[in-house]
Image 1 (cartoon, rainbow, N blue to C red):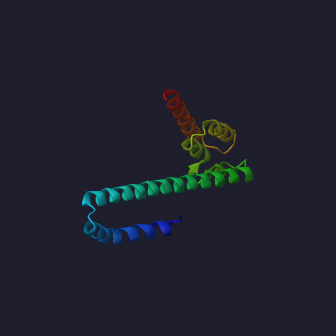
Image 2: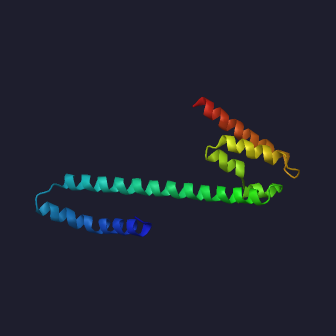
Image 3: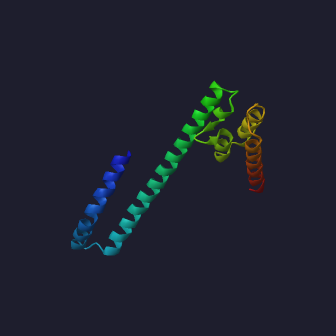
Length: 137
């Protein structure tokens, strides 16, 4: 189901629910049953919205990661190729939980001539924090 269909379903339910409750009351269905049905529908809508949000966020992250990898593959000797929208490739990898790959990227980045020492140090500290969190859990 796409976004437009989801939105249309929500709009239709929001418009027709009071009418359905009144109709159901006419047939002897209690308001509590109608309210619990509404609660179930709202829970379903909230869950599907949350899932869509997380999937969209993950797709955006992987798209940026793929763009960064492509930049590094094209220009492996250029320190600025390791950045996409101001974020380093290793930071993206750490956020996605790929510590080994991030460590390799940090090592390659540290070997470049134009890489700044402050950036390298910050990336290594982020990697160390990720390793500590992994050991604690």
